[in-house]
Image (cartoon, rainbow, N blue to C red; front, side):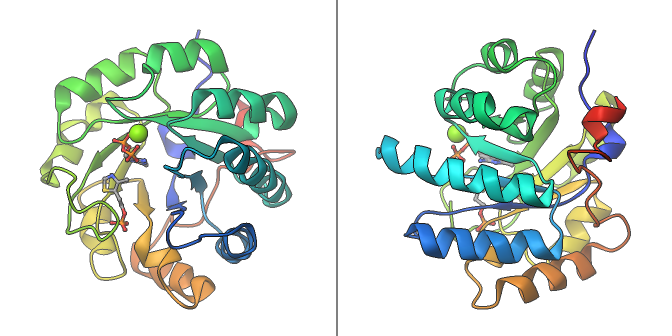
Length: 235
Ligand SMILES: Cc1ncc(COP(=O)(O)OP(=O)(O)O)c(N)n1
Ligand SMILES: Cc1ncsc1CCOP(=O)(O)O
Ligand SMILES: [Mg+2]
């Protein structure tokens, strides 16, 4: 019944925006354009502010950018924003939910079977199984290394990635991923490496993406393109 992408189709670098590192529209869009031009698998819009108008404006502009690059835009936390953007931009828009956000089952039900809906599972095989059963498109684990963006996130061991391999969903590693730690996370089994600071905290974003992809090795080139060569169309 599910039309979720098979695990082999989500693979590569997953860049996540940060409203402190990218404080205004122009900085945000220029930075994301640079990252997208170098080839990322997914872009997440993560804005913790209470400014709904800004989130809609920026989300809409990012969706336009992502559509041009045929890369999915994943909204963090905000189901209503994801739904609004989905109405306008279609299934290029997805959602990431954590354990304190709207439930994965609700998100899946409201966004439909074709949307990418990802879930935070920290370092828990139980949460991972529940997320898989509730329709997650990918499972995110971490933080694995010291994170400048979210230092308070609970630490996790890379061994969780192997433990959940049997679920057959793409595994995301997050937290302190950079060019130095990327090979370790990749070798431990992560299909996707989610990165804030090592992309958007760097002065040359295109170069940062190139370096990370180099360290990720084979398969770091995105293959999640939406459009004529879409994994979504191929499902
Ligand atoms: C890819 C990815 N993985 C994990 C998270 C963290 O989500 P959450 O636990 O809801 O924490 P916040 O990001 O909302 O602070 C994520 N955003 N993306
Ligand atoms: C959102 C989130 N969840 C766990 S760590 C983290 C932040 C990752 O940012 P960085 O790549 O800068 O460590
Ligand atoms: Mg959240």
